[in-house]
Amino acid sequence: MGFFVSGAATATRKPALLARWRLVLGRQAEAHGISCGTPGAESGAAATEELIDFLFETRRGVGGDGDGSGGAGGPDDGDGGERTGGLEASRLTVPEWVDKVHQLFPRSVKEVMERELVRRRGIAELLDRPDVLERIEPNRELVKTLITHKDLISPNTRGLARKIIAQVIEELKRKLVMRVEQALTGAIRRDKHSPRQVFRNLDLRTTLRRNLKNWDEERERLLVDKIYFHAAERRRRPWHVIVLVDQSGSMLDSAIFSTVMASIFAGLPGLRTSLVLFDTDVVDLSDKVSQPVDVLLSVQLGGGTDITRALGYAATLVTEPGRSIVVLISDFYEGRRESELLTQTQTIVDAGVRIVGLAALGYDARPEFNRKLAKKLRKLGVDVLVCTPEHLADCMARIIKG
Image (cartoon, rainbow, N blue to C red):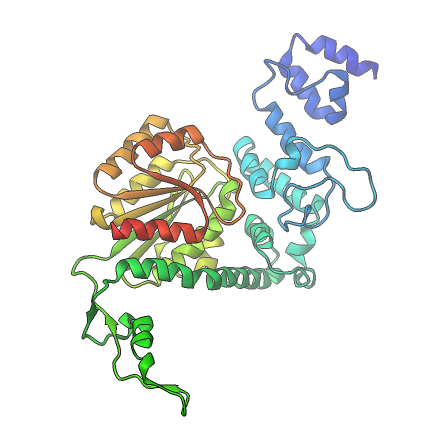
């Protein structure tokens, strides 16, 4: 123990050296004055310690806190050991951990740390053994784990992993599709009706309501003597919805909901949907917008964030600004200079395009986002929301109605 004390005394004049020793010696060194948080310590040391502690000092089994992602949870591994008080590491989730590792370490180190994470956190069996994966109840958190570690899934498990992702996504879509369709179709369609009998324009509700007088009690049938159809869409281009999805690890949950919502938008008459993933690069997956599983398996977690570039690309897709909506899903932590993002945003808004910024999309999101920048974007006319998918549909319906 004397080494710690003398080491700390010597290193007080060299904060960077002290921080490095703290990383080598582990959390127990804190009791002897060796800390990553010493003023002037090497930049990034505290963040590095958080990531390393998440790997080596926190005991969890498969699913950790039961979220299926190996995310933040209690350190008690269920073997009766004493629960310890967690700090930063207890707040991390696996997607966030991957994101931060990508930012702090070169690719070769990142790959080693990810494999160690899988081995130590009990995820390895899920990725390598279909018989184990089959016993896990499909849920959104399991989907997040599979997406996060998709490159480590063994070939004999890949088909099952895809099936699980598809099952969860289909269930989400089934729950959302009716509510979203009602909100948006009602906004796009006209109240008046048309003599043109086009099946996709069938107004089933009006048809049923106005023919109720023809109910035949004896035969227990509704006799329909007139069918009502919505009027044709305006003789203009359809509304164009451009969904921009930040690939940051912390946005993975929102990315899942965003992908499902985009697939629903793509199936609605009167809407044209583009889907774009971005970090510092921009990937247009509009050709896969109706295939949410393929989109999610294309997600590359980690890396920087260039919202300015994503918005710039969205601007090139706009053909009729007054009938275009950009849905930006991001935590608003911009990698570029803030002024560039604000300038790009102002240009798009001034052209007549509506922008909806989502710091989180889901049912239980507790977003951590750049509130100062979000406030500045609001002043430019951006609708910044933290909302459920249904609320997003209502917001878009209000925009379409004008």
